[in-house]
Amino acid sequence: MLFVQQIEIEYRKYVRYANFAQARNAIKFYPVRINPDEIQQNVLFHSAFFYQDTNGMHNRGTKSRQFTESQLYDGKFNRSPFGKKIGVKPIGDNQYEVHFYGGFDKTAFVLRKDKYGRIVFNERNTYYDTGEWYYQFFVFNIVCCEKDNFKEKIFFNKNPDYEFNGMKYLRYC
Image (tube, rainbow, N blue to C red):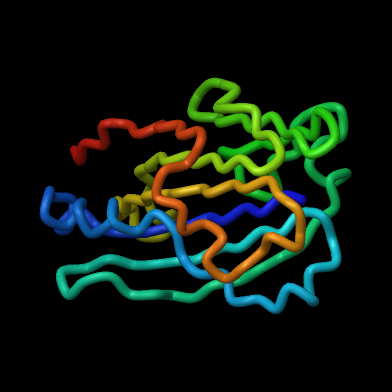
């Protein structure tokens, strides 16, 4: 079974500095509040959304979705379950090839049973209606294990077996 968590932190230019970055970097995992009996598929995707301003970090909500492995890969990477930057391909029994798309396609790591991987990256975007810049910090935690090993704090291992860093230098013009 594959457990995937996405943490997304959105922020503006006035909180780009080191003291605010420390608060963003401190959030590497978040509890998954779902009853294990509700897990019916073999891929669980949990998302946690935050917004950071000068008053601190604000939780904008969480959601969980479930998928089958066939929705991950159909001869080419189907990136829609996890967004445009992450692709996952089943390559065997309890084995997954995890890809990162950051202007290129790179195999971040191959995840096997009872292993834990993390991908960290950032982006700079603009609102289509106002043209204002905003930034996003992403953390993807991915665990391959049996459903019986699921718990609320499944991603709370501070030292993943594999870690991929796709951080870019984001400057504001």
